[in-house]
Image (cartoon, rainbow, N blue to C red; front, side, top):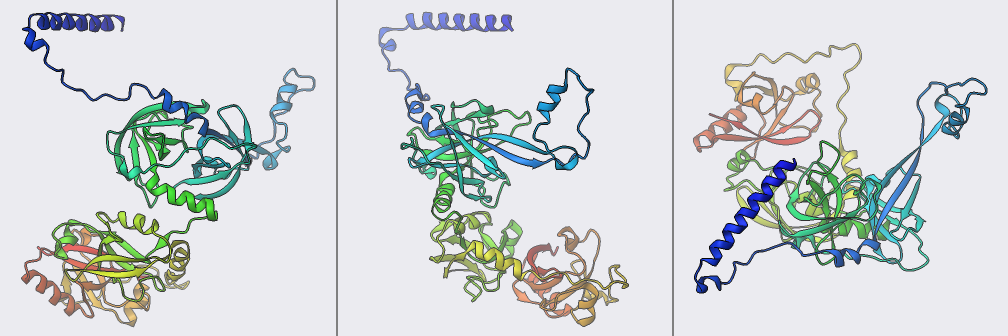
Length: 507
């Protein structure tokens, strides 16, 4: 190592000397040329950090956990020199067997958002805690009360009762941040309080499958275990993210950290602070992505938006404002580029707000107005709507029913079809409210099999036209082929009536 460092040093000196000779040999006019401006990072973040350190806290939690270990406590001989050690180690664990209790401790970070004592952190930092203690930069400690949590964004709000106002930090607008902007993280990695790291925004809008509203800021500022719940600052000293997750094979920082942006977090935090719970907007639809094949089937120039695959009965748009098969491309003035954009923009909208929604229906763009419900109420409604799968009575044959003996003309796109009569409903356990043409068999390696269509599924629509008989299916497929379509867009219902859209090759 020493040799390589030394060699590198000498190369640098040699290059520097050569550069100096080159400059000295230049004409005077050339030497006075203005240097090319370079963009550098901040000279120092000391002044910025000094004003923020007092607002960042260490969060210590403890949780009493029942010990499921049924093994008895170790026994030591009377008068053994280890007697005191064992007595101390097992003290308070309640004797033998599963009655023993043990205490689990964890550490995390947080930050003060109000001088009166409101503190923000991650939900996973305090989840299940029996005791929460806040450790401040000046060494003081206060017990904290949990005000509210939101598992969907992994956020929590705590409250302490300080004797004098606390140092608080403001929220900034994460939407103004660009890739390459400098950011600073402050937290308590591995229990080391008040640690400052600096980096840049590496990416925006990251989806790491952590929740339904993933929109993370990615940064290379060092974030480690214990940083969870700590703030990510811009160079104005404003919080633009809450540090939540890292990618790390080793458990330490490898320069890939993720923060919940304030554009998503601020509204959630305000609701938790004011109400102790979230109050998100709700549209009352089930959605799926618009793939390139689906876009082509719907005569869309580019795949974008969210395809409506279901409408919740009793929901905000159950009156027909939005229908199954519509594609939402804009919501309340905000573009819906990908399917995952829609749940986020709807959730960020106030309950009861009337909004304009731009949709594509039957190949035409139109605007409809809807009034939002509340997501928390809607989740209960959606659960109640779910139809249980019919149970097969004990003693009956539970094997899949054989495929119907159908003429060859009823084999379409690799599927054998039959009318959905009472016998087929009973055989496949199909709900009474499902209408369409039942699929009795799917040929292996066919176009339908590629899309995971299975026997017992029901074709409800093809190309946005309702299907009643196997002949309807055959005729509609031929129409689409004659129209030059390469794919058929099928609306498929499963046995319980849950809908989805699939595209099947017709070539």
